[in-house]
Amino acid sequence: MMEKIQHSEVEVKGLKLHVAEIGTGSKAVLFLHGFPEIWYTWRHQMIAVANAGYRAIAFDFRGYGLSQQPAEPEKETMYDLVDEIVGLLDALDITKAFLVGKDFGAIPAYLTAALHPERVGAIITLGVPFLLPGPSAVQNHLLPKGFYVTRWQEPGRAEADFGRFPVKSVIRNIYTLFSKSEVPVAADDQEIMDLFNPSTPLPPWFSEEDLSTYASLYEKSGFRYALQVPYRSLNVETGSGELKVTNPALLIMGEKDYVFKFPGMEDYIRGGAVKNVVPDLEITYIPEGSHFVHEQIPDKVNQLIIEFIDKQSI
Image (cartoon, rainbow, N blue to C red):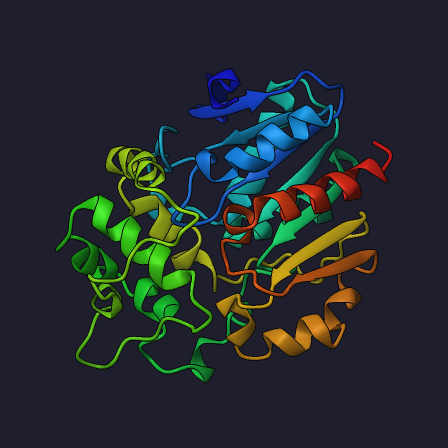
């Protein structure tokens, strides 16, 4: 089925975006990747939702993969991705879509729903609940200073760390480290890449071919935009005040996802405070699921997505 996925360039806000799609249904599902991902991270889900009668669309965010870089990446925030999502829906003539976001892709997904609820049929996120960008999005100060987000927010640091290795090794290291249940934290005399043990095999659900596909796209884009959005723009105060998502929403969390170990995160999700900002939220836990649960246990994730969107009107 992979060869049935169609690829095109779509111009949005003056940038050419790489867009992949499959399926001809009247209802569209737009998939939003995280880091270190690109459109390809959704390969299993795209085929499944297309087979279920939907039009599946995944794209490389600006500055990622085969999409063009904006002129000044260092000025960009999550809100540029919200404008991009709405602009892409406009360019594809889609009035309303289901949004599926993973990792940081969950943040622009929720922001799009909060700011443009009429464009969103429902929202599904994996690994990350509703988080408003700003100083309290991820409470770095409650984690050791070697916390990967803190390290990657420091200008130049990740560039020097990643630059010691081929792009393919960086992707391999991150995929392997971040599929564990512990938050990646470096010691004072280490960088994040030093946490990787070279004898560790790839996760069984991630092939050398998958790795090569990711690497080939990041070899084109580099990591400049990815370090800005999400990491260096995550704590920027956005002035959007209190936002709520009124659309129906589903959060899928792997129980072995390291994000659960972020300060306050498990309580925010399991304790129900997240429902103050997303009142119409269902939460499903996958016991063995890692941060990459959609690639690790695709059949289960596909079933959850399809069952949820089948219940919605659009």
